[in-house]
Image (cartoon, rainbow, N blue to C red; front, side, top):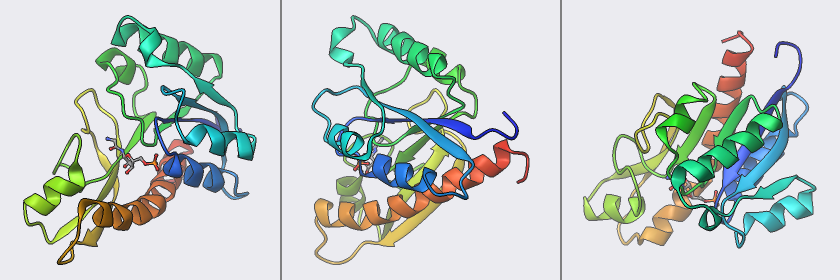
Length: 197
Ligand code: GAR
């Protein structure tokens, strides 16, 4: 791997704003990486149009066409290995991955989650932070481990929770930080992979 750019795949399920941010970041000259492909598990994901417009290869692997989680993950794994991927970034990829899949990519699988982990693993993180009366909320980029939303933290960014916030208002404040956190975390991981951190 040394000397040649790190081959990256991005997995997403929806709007794709983190995918787009990462794609733009990877395209910058100083980032020693290449975005080889993106994969979505949803044929209706908004991010597919972003890929088309930017000329980024996007593969749809519809999870509904598979009988089991294992079968879907095996297909995903096959696609990633066929493309010689070195590093996978989950960016709004809303599907649990099997332990076998995760363990097959040790420290080569990153995720972004819209909370200050270990708080609020799972869904509805903004609403749960509001319900708990938190004064601070945020996002986390971490290495993935088989447990959901678990693994060593690479970057966290926090935002204030303001009086009168709704979950959507808080989500808007957090996503801005997500778009800063993920490129920052990716740079740190690439440096580590290159042996310079
Ligand atoms: C982001 O807020 C991301 O952190 C979250 O989904 C959103 C995707 O937005 N991911 C998770 O909740 C994963 N557990 P995007 O499609 O615009 O990047």
